[in-house]
Amino acid sequence: MISFLRQHVTAATLVQLVIEVSWLFAVGLLVIHFKEGMAKPLLHAAAPALVFALVMVTLNGAFGIYRRHESLSSSAYVLRLCLAPAIGVPLAYVIADALPGGGLFQQYVGIAFVCAFGGLLLVRHVFVLPLISRILPHRVLVLGTGAEAKLVEASLATAAPPGLQLVGFHPLEKEQKTLVSRRRVIARSGPLEATVKQLGVHEIIVAVREQRGGVLPLRSLLECRLNGVQVTDLARFFERVHGRVPIESLKVSWLIYGQGYRQGWWRSLIKRSFDLSAAIALLVFTLPIMAVIAISIAIESRGPIVYRQDRIGCRGRKFVLLKFRSMAPDAEKDGKASWASANDARVTRIGRLMRRTRMDELPQLINVLRGEMSFVGPRPERPEFVAMLTEQIPFYAVRHSVKPGITGWAQVRYSYGATVEQAVKKLEYDLYYVKNHTLLLDLLILIDTVRVVMLGEGAR
Image (cartoon, rainbow, N blue to C red; front, top):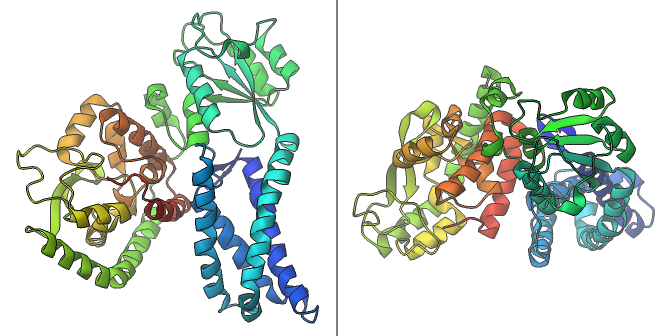
């Protein structure tokens, strides 16, 4: 596992990205080279070919092709494979116009795409992924067989990074329950360090919540660590593999002593500068769209065009959030706050379209200009919900240590939350963002937001 600007990338994924970028770059070069009859130097179109490769791989990533935390159905996988080039090819064509050799690339971009796309699927599924599993195995042993170990087993069943091999579960003397698959439980035939050496283990995941009272074999774990074996607790495992921090395994000490939570003036300056420039540019660009939306809302039903609602922001401060009204004017005539539900009858026809495309959020660009929100951050909740969730969910107030955002890590990784249980899941992603937020993570979230909007994920 490689950490780049606090973002975790497996060595297997990095190898896959390098191979795929190299393949796309080579195809872009060779198509032009052969079509021009070898008259031009091979590197004449290197710049547009490299842009083509990087754009395609970036969009593949944005549409979740490289994501390991979920299993995609065949139809979802094919849809995302098609959407990436549908955006990427025109985008690479436009960018190429400003690059040396771009004219040649524009002539043959269609042929380059057909060759690259067909070959890429073959390279990825026939060559790269099987090869990674063989040359970069990462053998993992889970310490424990109880509820926490079952969480690890379930998570690895849905998120299986290339090359990761679950060796099994090592039982503990003071842990009586066995909730994992019994066929994967390793019989204790000696000390832990001997088992680790015999099975060629690279990493031990400590899946035990209560670690006091001599539950853990600390001497054996130290011996393994001194022998170069990585030892990972449950919170760090979920943070690394799934991009979230499970509440049930979280301790105050992890928040206090854990790395991250950097919010220096330089990071704040960069984030604020980006927010201001992007908000101004988007306001200018979307002004005609917002005018059409405003007229449509006024025609469909009486009531305010822009809806104002109290939300809780950074450090628990209250502010007024702006949205295009997507519900009937009397949506909460009883005065009680309530979450939106699937196929909510209160949503108007134009409101349903706005919610699906997230256009109802456009007025929040004003909140960004005011400094009440950022482009990226945990979504702000209503005071009524914050009071309820703070009482019921541990560490809920931690999400208010950064500015709320128009989009966020929880929004691109999890669906809409309309229950306390779903709010817990969203908080797990918000805690990851609060701990690890960087400019790179913000950019990844913005790219992922394109996928969410285009596929209508999580809309209510």
